[in-house]
Image 1 (cartoon, rainbow, N blue to C red):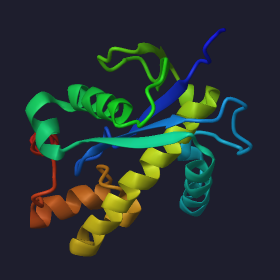
Image 2: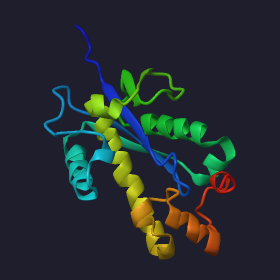
Image 3: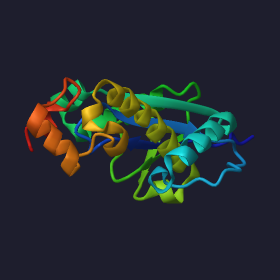
Image 4: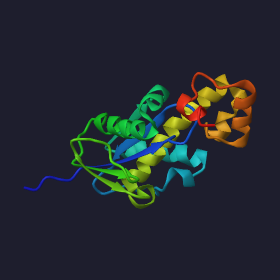
Length: 186
């Protein structure tokens, strides 16, 4: 008897942000796939992302989040922190996959077969689902930070280095949530 292949899709959000954690999600969809129209989270409105995330949660076999904090980003760099968040997402799954499909060029160091797929969030529904879950989770962190520091307008810029965000940093300074290693480069 042949065992079934359990595939997890993994994607990250927040690599280029000046603030907060980097988030990764791992998603295992049913064998028959999803009835949802999944695509890269960046191509969706905030409202449709939240609606799709709720549907993904209902339809999925298993979902998890992995986070690397801003202190870890500053300590080991964004590349290694991203791979760490991906590793955490995979190992936080309650079901162990046989194969992990990761968006991008690089794979986390895990003891599971892994394959990286460039633009995987547009090609593989498990990765698209992970992209949406990770984005909604990280956006909630940005809403929390926006409520604490409205002048930085994190709801709009998600912590990325927009002109307005950089001007506020220049005039008011950084918060304790800003990534030191990123701010030093500005």
